[in-house]
Amino acid sequence: MYIADFHIHSKYSRATSKNMEVDEIVRWAKYKGINLIGTGDFTHFLWLSELKEKLKETERFGIYTYNGVDFILTAEVCNIFEKKGKIKKIHNVIFLPSFDKVEKLNSILERYGELNVDGRPVLQMEAKELIKIVLEVDKDGFVVPAHIWTPHFSLFGSNSGFDRIEDCFEEYTDYIFALETGLSSDPAMNWMLPSLDRFTLISNSDAHSPAKLGREANVFKNKFDFLKLKDILKNKDKNEFLFTIEYFPEEGKYHYDGHRHCKVCFSPEESLKHNNICPVCGRKITIGVLHRVYQLSERKFGEKPPDYIDYKKLVPLDQIIGFVIDKAPESQVVKNEYLKIVNRIGSEFEILLNIPEEELYKNMERKVAQGIVNVRKEKVKIQPGYDGEFGKIEILFDTEEDKEQQTLF
Image 1 (cartoon, helix red, strand yellow):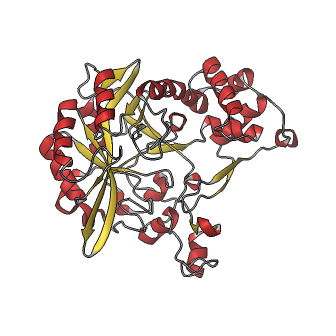
Image 2 (cartoon, helix red, strand yellow):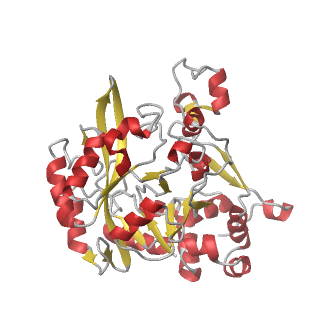
Image 3 (tube, one colour):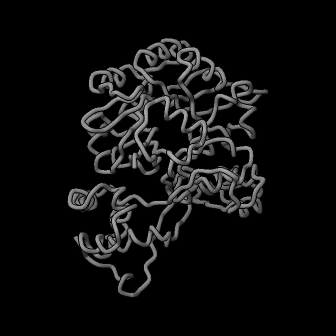
């Protein structure tokens, strides 16, 4: 397996950990078992300088490496523009194969916004214009619309998005061949739209801290170079692209509808009963991803398109440990146990995906092992996220012995 997380952020993006530096990203990529990381934020001159200093070219075109982890040059930008009298706000992830092309692109993009205020800069330009410029800089470069269902800042977002991808990218739509599902949706939800059948769905962490790397990711059979990756995505090559790793979408912070200030969380059906109005304050609620997918869907949930890349749902290991011992995943006790497990047994993805059950029980506390096994079986209960609040997951245990809270650590 060759696991890739193409979309992350550096310490130069807003609301991002100061630990999002190259060395710390690499350290956590190894803990996770991620083989390739998108650099993120190459439009920011300080981050670009650090990347150029540390990353070394490999024999694979467009792939760089540092201390045993591969990198590909990526950046997320925010396109803000007016379309038919409405303001649109769309996030897009740019892929380029070389630092020379990145610098050339940056010199053009700085005409449309201040690149060094934020690692994810705001560009006053149409999304289709971004495609045009990227192709002019490098015909091999490409753009992937980011977290396409998020209410704010996305292609299909309920607040400032479009109903059809063609309405956004117009004559450049054919140059889009992959879409990022985002944490609040999974491939099965996207399969409800036949209009998306031709696109390859990818999943990435959009990590703002090292421990969040790989919470969603892409699993390939083999290593690739830049052009091979592009070919895999354009052709939805199931022999090379094995599956995506998905958050349970209910955990995403925009899965359900709601108004967090009033602590109102609604399913799409409940929202319609209330005419999409918050019953507490009387203002319009934020329409979440599930509701928006249903608005545009033409297939029933569970129906599959003729051709698709499979996926697997996982809960990050630190969340499993935290649930078992009733501590926050960010707590030091959880971090210590996490590091003990991955240093003793193997990477997080190896543990969550591949290590046999009997080996898990031999090498870690029983209830943590049971939690991993039950997540593999999707034995979970989730309070859905809404309006910027992440959902809360509960791992279900079968026996009374399993249900007992144990002081493990």
